[in-house]
Length: 132
Image: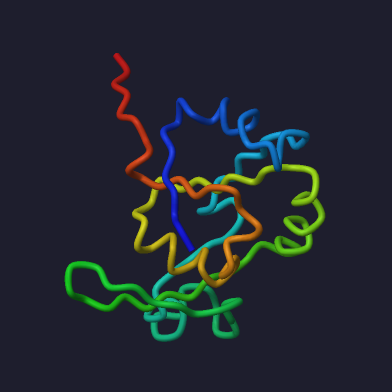
């Protein structure tokens, strides 16, 4: 299973160059706060920031700077149904401004076989823009 990162300038060619997908349009989805919400298990269960009965869709973890971070993930209602409905018609590219370790710990649970999302884009794929 090979992971492939692309430059944002390659998004246009992504929709046209792959013969297997050439009849599909490109659907770019933002991961955080659009498709899901993630929080530390401490915030969910100890601080009860999401209420006393909050129960994440699933829990996962990743290691950041030699420290294990445990998170709960709240999927938006009908997220998986929507993805499965549009996947035959669209190349789905998932984007997050978060770091790859965090994102992959979540996306590997949603799409463990890399079949739903054509590409994954992370913070490293972002470009820095300065506004005056």
